[in-house]
Length: 386
Image (cartoon, rainbow, N blue to C red; front, top):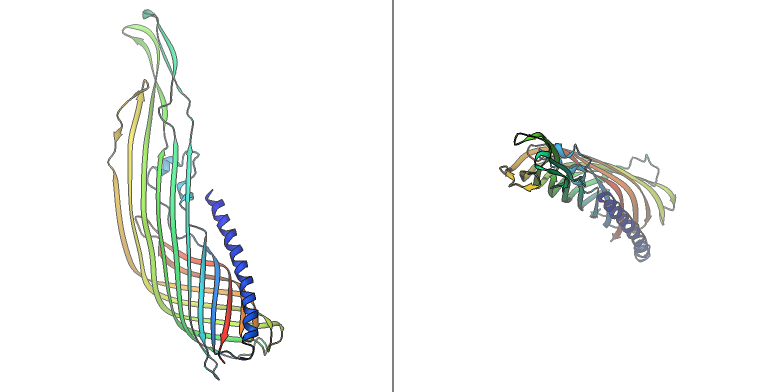
């Protein structure tokens, strides 16, 4: 059910992406007509939307009794606790190129969020226990069935909220290598990148993984021959829950290379270009993780179908809070197509960005995970001034 929900969300997001791109194209055409007199705009405003496929960024919560639960044909709690697969995001940039200069100064922001959850409940239907009491001397001959006092089951409920924010401030220069024809460009930039990732989740697992019926047999009773079959029903009921959060925030130097080459069209009017680029950064920041979880359990039994008081085990409570300074390498790339006008541009493409070892996704102990985003994007750019 969780996978179906994620697939539905992905389909809706893709439809929104295509709709946005169509709207952007209409706006770009209108803006080109209004700004056609400006050959080389000094300021560009860029807005866009994106769908990001997320990498799995945290360990699953697995209290000790989960190993017993997995011995049954129940859905593993780890599968229900998986973070959402897709994030929907927005982006915006402001670029400034002084008149008569090949320098480009830019500031950009990308923000994305993903909320998801899972819910699984499975149970068995045990047979009634067979009870026999036969003592011929006393004229007793009983054979019946005792209703099951419990059943094996597993319930897992989970909720996760993720967000990411990436800010870039760069200064770049069109190096004019001419490697991509007279109507292409190649810009190398350097600056600063800031990235912040957050993840909050809560999970609960309830289970009776080992309900069982055993029998005790007696052949005599009060000194007389007997045939007695006594069922003893036993179970262990577990409840565990966890609340946790993970985050990373870092700042560091960045470099990027962006290039384009004209495919068709007129460089002074409308044209189609192929765009691509690479980027890298080293982020110095802090990695944080907090978690609090509790596990409760009791043992129950029912001999002769009579309810007995359960044996309660001590509640296990564990809290952890970790913080560590880390250096996170970041690399990325993109490729796409753009429909360009003198003062407007519409772009569609595919982008990937990976931040290695950015998150401490462990529960009780530190365990690092990469945080990555990759997927399609669409942007519209409007040029102002000249």
